Image 1 (cartoon, rainbow, N blue to C red):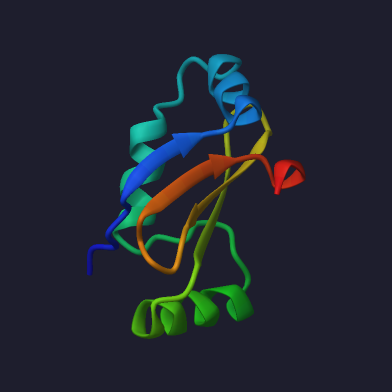
Image 2 (cartoon, helix red, strand yellow):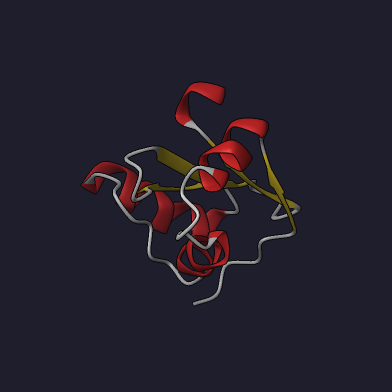
Length: 90
């Protein structure tokens, strides 16, 4: 399974978070999201993502950077965009 990502954007907060965690590669998180590794989501969100794949709904992944900052990746239902952001920026 490969999730179409569309255009990938990062919010200001996400860009700063990656700058403050220089050993992290945002491409690895994009790849995980794209290939169905939703990271640190609970069972409810994991099931919601699986349903979203079948019904063209929004998909959410959550990861924690080595710095302890939590990031989200959200792909829109129409698969036109994927955004990397901090939860508080949602």
